[in-house]
Amino acid sequence: MSIQVAILKILVSHVGGKATLDSLKHDLAILSSSGDDWHARIKRLASRVPELDIFSNRYVVRDVEGWEVTSAGREFLRALEAVTQDNLPSAPAAETAIRAEGKLIVVGHRFKSRVRPQRDPEQSTLARRRPIREPH
Image (cartoon, rainbow, N blue to C red; front, side):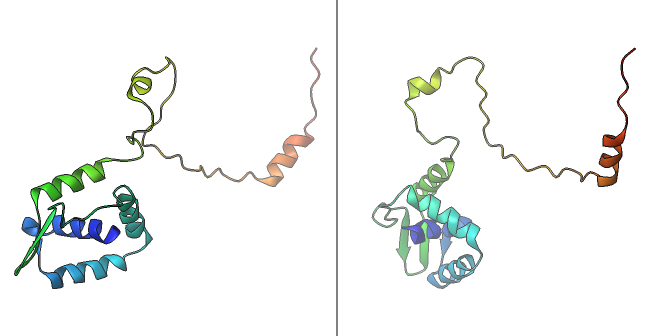
């Protein structure tokens, strides 16, 4: 569940990993209105652990003072966030260990469209009108 991943992230951000229920609700309200990037990130993380239950797994404990993330919860979140598109297991280890020589692998780089300066239409018309010199 994405709400459970969000709760883990919020608790980890608090001093000591502990927050009151009111504080959690407040932080969730702020984050839920913070835009599509937050929702997309939490949804991506939650999709990796569809059966997550932060309480039965003992990632979060509750008491009269509030909710607290455990060391197991911190480690779980760290491991969950460490998986990126660059290191998702998609091929057998033997295949990925041996790569053909000369293959280019680009990791973590996004190409941006270059903005090219506009040509002056008058200049290009003049260039086309120049006579071609014949070789001697």
